[in-house]
Image 1: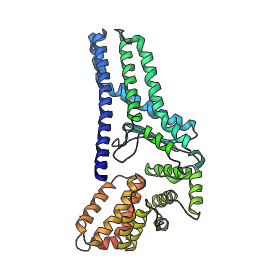
Image 2: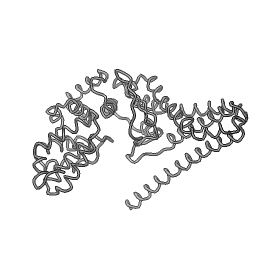
Image 3: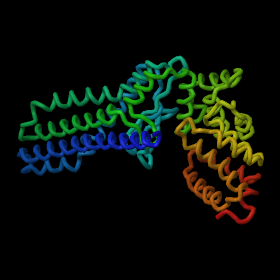
Image 4: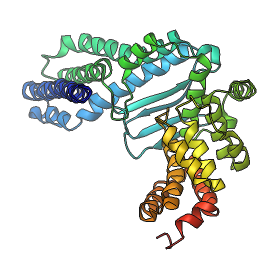
Length: 384
């Protein structure tokens, strides 16, 4: 029965994604038809100018519509007193730290084409209401932008001159804004299980998380995007120290402190933070504990820690890389050195990009290879 329900849920998820794809495709076709109609009705350059608009559809519609959506999130975050660290549209990523940095990213990842990385300045700002406002800012901006675009373009759509072509471009922007609204208001989750804006809003309304844990979650995101601890607001370090000094330190504070130590290459501090978690805790700390066991040569304890973890708890590449170091040691010690060597080479390849976090994980792997993990992995052959 459980298997039937699981398959039914999988089919429903696929049907839901197909429905979203169908609506978005229809909207894009509608935008192309609008540009073709403008080209046919235009007297400018015998309609050639209108045809050129077809090749600028991504710039005229999708890019500005995505930028408006992300600015909606950013403005809402600022109104809530949060700090905006990153605004990304397509391949262009803008960082706001001690200085403005504009760079490119290699892929879009799991998002629809852009994202904003905001963070509360203090734990008391990490409230349910503010989270909902920040998340809703994007769809609201898309809806308002679409309404204004249609209203502005309406009087000039039938014009056969330049005004008509401009109206067509604005009209396409409006359709693209509607597309952004559909993608973020139609409840869907990506392959990692991360929900879009409406799912996050519904989750925030349903759940009542500890504000300090939400605060630490944002701090983790800052490290993953390459912001050094000294760039954060001073409240972050203070809250971590308070949490770790309590009788029951939280996993979130421990993970942030672990990453702080890692980016500074303070491995002894990282080891001290990778303590055995409470037996009832089924989260990311088990992975840290497994890594420490492998460094100590206790592969049986590492295997047990990995088995007790039911998931990362956070959708973090770095955490899965720490887990991979532990798993390589467990596999090598069990005699499955071929799989262990293959995983080692793939992990080493994944760490090629020179980000602060990748450099730290690479140093962690080098350190592990100098100890029992390296002995177990090279017991019968040399790593390629």
